[in-house]
Length: 638
Image (cartoon, rainbow, N blue to C red; front, side):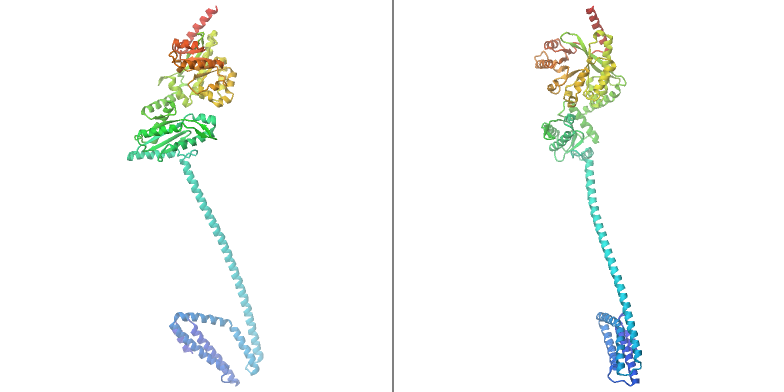
């Protein structure tokens, strides 16, 4: 048997294949038990051949034979033997777990056998040993149960822990998924915001057109393409005429609505590859890439002007008419910077406004020289008052019925040491545009009133003379104008009716002035009001009956044609009659012939001025004239 065990150990296929050795070991155990039982029965002389004792020898040989067959199968089919080995081990492991019960069974058999035949051990010994084994088995089972229960409890706790961890992981995973979804949504929102910011940075928020930044970028690209491959382009700057009047009369909401409609209408006038942008305010700009010849560009300008002849429906289907002035740069191949293109287009646009608005003007180099001169004039105007470069001349105004002097019109003159003598037609428009006209106008008002007060004191018999002072629209519309006027007159000590303010017709259409009781306050002050250049501006006849105008001044353009059978005679006669029917007086300016004077006198025109009656004179010449007038009056009175 020992040789069989050694042979099995030497020839085992794998270390873990112990089944044949175990079978041989059980065979040895069966043989030992049988020999022990045989020895005891022999001593007791109770041995019977063929009994249970001999079964151990049979079992021994059977187990050894099975071990040998098992070893052969292991050598031939390792995979099958391994599977059988595993199964047998499981079976043996199960048998080992019932080993105590086998002991109990054996002891129980011995107790039973003790009643049938005598044994070397007493009944009490066998019974006590059996009880001890039973106690050990029960204790072992209790310990095993407790251990199993503790193990099961641990397994349950582990399962619960795993379940909690699984739930926590699911929650964390759900949170992560939600956070990822929120992050994705936030990323999409950020992308939308970034895209909107990029759009807003390059587009006008009101009209959604490209703004100055985007337009200049496209213009720079057009300039680069022109330099590289010779593709031409043209630039049009558009400025709405009298847009401020829309804001003042309709409100800024209506003005914004108008700008949106203008943008839509401009896009309809252009090709797909043209760019229209809003530079700001009421100014738009167009880039025409590869526009063709000059006639095509001019046709586009005319198409835009025609579109602006149609009304714009804004703010509740209110029809508004507005025109546009266009400055055009056609031959743009010699430019290197976009700012130069915009500068020249802007110059052409302002020249179009000066020539009557609602038109286009193509840039020419000589226009730039004119603009440069305007800039120089503006710079010189800023220091002209401080340097005392301005002076006043006074043109007498006469009664056409008595030929007597009734007053003067103050006319500003400017003698600049660098530019020389400048005519009012050259520097007054510049002063109007720059806003300097307000400061200049205040100086003229104060100087003219001061001079009239001095003449009243120096020539007391002529203290009825009146001073006509031209007031610009910007000066007249200032909120503090009436207060400054009253302060000036009271400070100088002049009677309010000695001052006659000359304003243009356009101011009569200012709703803010009409609705603010401005004119009534002016009338209560006693200051006279004269409408200058009547008939050349707006059709304001309907407003005259609601505004306290004292004198209507007929423009010289109507006077110059008198005597040639021109229709202006009928017009002047109608103006005079209308004025008298409204208790107003009339003044004719620009009288240069005796025939004109006679016609005007026959029409009952009240006053007149012009080169025929007297040219503008400086203070010294006026005082010489007034001294003669006073002497004549003293001789008459004496």
